[in-house]
Image 1 (cartoon, rainbow, N blue to C red):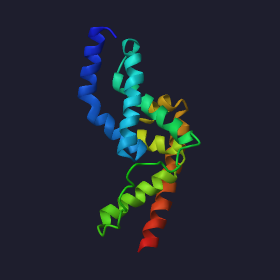
Image 2 (tube, helix red, strand yellow):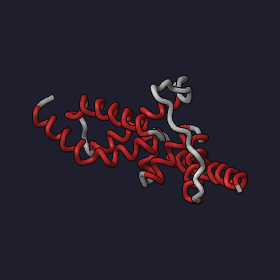
Image 3 (cartoon, rainbow, N blue to C red):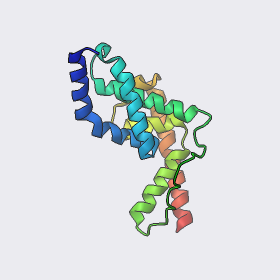
Image 4 (tube, helix red, strand yellow):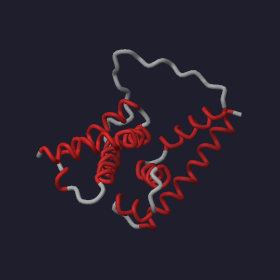
Length: 166
């Protein structure tokens, strides 16, 4: 990488890493997986840095979305992972906010990958439908219907879970 390109890339990473790691966490639901996802996206971006036209952050985000969809599609996603020390057991928290967040996280994990990506892009990233459609390579109508179906399904899942806990 040319020294000027390296400097520009390093400045970009320093300036945007906090925002990008938050997005990666939303996509993966796990801090370690989020770090891996961001690292993979940055490596791919570094290799193409000179050729990126426009907003490099949009390019990195697009790489992250596509990488995570590939993980979701992979046969090994969802399997148990062997770790040196098993995580501590999570005990129920009495606060309503935590319960709602857990219910929403559980419901999000039940959505198909494309619907989850639409929700992340549309509502977490606050992108317009046309931009979401461009990133996903589909029509605006598809984005609208996927978002509508995903929100409807989330409401049903979260409502069912909250009613079961009450």
